[in-house]
Length: 414
Image 1 (cartoon, rainbow, N blue to C red):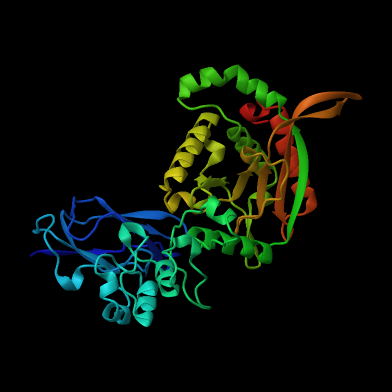
Image 2 (cartoon, helix red, strand yellow):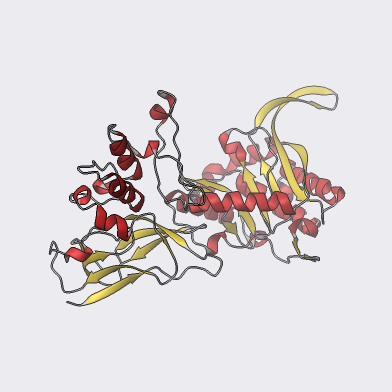
């Protein structure tokens, strides 16, 4: 027997711990070298943990939902074992709480009980508990239902943990039918990413003096340019010409003119950045993420569109790296893709300003004393009033407006 340890990969310096999501392999199953064994969720990204060698899984030391740290041992692979070979009895299942393991053998004969469920089974001397979790695993809800004599329930009825208890990383799907029937409630713990986003938003509101200024933009010139060149653009560059690249270029024009919009606060110092790394807020299945378009001032519209398309695909698949979401000097949030008419975006610390883009809709406006219909987009820029005065904020947004209403200026850099 040649045993290889499987350990948690090295996390970044800013990430103290992570959560194991779902094992893709069971004990006794073969694995190929570099095959993904389990996804590891941090508060920023989801990492894949590849098998360090080919062989057979002989021990799973940490269960789904366990909190782990860098270098922690979570499984073992026998590089000389044969697929399907029986694992030693002591390692036939992921380790649960010691007391629960000893007290509930009958209930876990055909399925594995989560630690909280095993405790309930032991306390109530339960047997023949039906598991509704992944691979027949017995959840806390299953154990509670069996203890009360009711039918086995799903994760949608799991009650809140005791005060101070750590929430497991259960990725329970939300059932609309269950929510609307018989006045039940569904409690789903926050993912690490969602908890981190919540923490940073509260930090932003508690440390920044946030103020928001608004303006309206006639998007007709951008729409006309896009309609004229979108087919040639896609044929030439292999990517569609969207609107976000125009907003990025307009933002860069304003940041160049008013550098304090691109600055950040560090203690009692103002740090002015001589580069333009623009964060693009993207909604993903795991929550809000903000990948960074670096050196946006040096990129063409095609380069920006390609990066946005790449980041969008990675966000959807959960493949964004920590490096791709670290840094940034200014952010753009596009609520318009969801139909938002107006909002007040929250600054992404340590940045000092953020642009909110909204849905472009036809509206009646007055031009030269005449009421006409134009495709209007309301822009909102939130800024940290500690270092940015209203003058710079308002004029910066006006610069963006002027650039979008005369997009040739973006190409000529005037």
